Image (cartoon, rainbow, N blue to C red; front, side, top):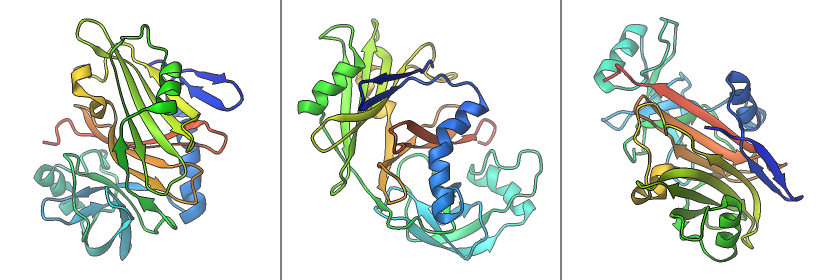
Length: 287
């Protein structure tokens, strides 16, 4: 996908950023990474819900905190740390930790008990050994309307007034800022052509945005999302978090494909630049 930066006026930042390898990945994740490191001294790591309700996590701390669909970080408590042989057996048995230490590196994986429960089809969650202070999760989804709608479609630049489109608002009760998600569709099959994440202030005014033109495949081997799939096929929202460590809400998205499961954290910096951290797990051959 092609992305580039364009600044519209003094307040609006629309990001179309070209992805160009590890440097670009590091640049986009820098703000999220820095805020976690500065606040709790570590980055979130992938963890996995197991069928029996326990969690496999890349940790050996007595307690950890899980970032799930809950309205807070859920505590989990150490039950057992796996040996390398036990960890290797975990993949074919439970189909998790598929992309962990593929070259035989020594990796720590432990089993934790928790009251948190899985939701959706992706067993992936995130974990840290320390809780992010004053984290609040949860969101409501609503229709895009009013000033928010007018501003979003102006920036999305549909080819015509009747071009097919989908949208939604993602907001958290009591939070000052909220997001809208948008997609434009084109062609005989009404396939997705452009997507956008917009950050709004309470009045509906857009503060920042990340807009992508979709060119070619949606992902390797995937069918293109179409209008009938709805905005939920474009943006699979797992949760929205607010915390003093972040200037704006942090979206947690399931961005899995045929080849891999993945979780994406998305937000904007205080200067309203787009930031994301992608946690990707290659799963071909894991099932």
